[in-house]
Image 1 (spheres, rainbow, N blue to C red):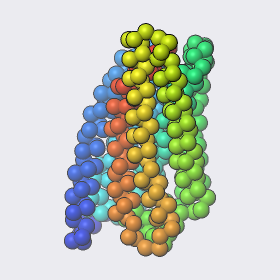
Image 2: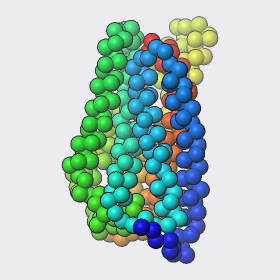
Image 3: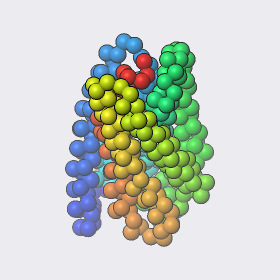
Length: 285
């Protein structure tokens, strides 16, 4: 089941992965458990809380499967169906996070741009949020089922890396790059910048204390947008380069990009669950 022989050139990078993924695992576990405790104490839920809970579930699932990735840095796992499952879980959770963050961005924009929608029937908003979350998971499950052959063990160089000559199905590749990244990126940038613009523009019409709150919210939304770009852009550049490459020389870049994407499990907790409580309190209730 294990192969613990490593090339000398792998040692430095393996140390980086061991340390990096271990830090993400423990930090993510502590942060997400803390957030789960906070959620358990919420008495009156709104649609923002539902989206954030969905994000928490995706992040938590990614965190609890990280020990397999850490183990892989010590002893290579045999390329079995377990690897197929692990890779599927890894990317399913990542794209669930991406789609949920997109939904939160749209919801925030609508709440700020059209305040009367925020005062609409609370139960109806909750049902919409639940339906969107179910749609996200269903879409991901359908895509995984349609292209499960692209993750079979014969296509893998290691448990978490594909062979360079085994390219992703073109349709699958385009779905990952366009539907899974470019469209959400456009939505997040458009909604976030418009939300920030509306918040800043409204500051001169409110009292000083309220204006400071809105500045703080605008800063948080800006940080969330740039965090999304930082975390998920490298991995999708890696997918593109791997698809175009004819050898295995790009695995180092892709592995680092995957680690960067994984750090989002920790950053979500800080950005969305702790800081955006102000957004939820001011514009969702």
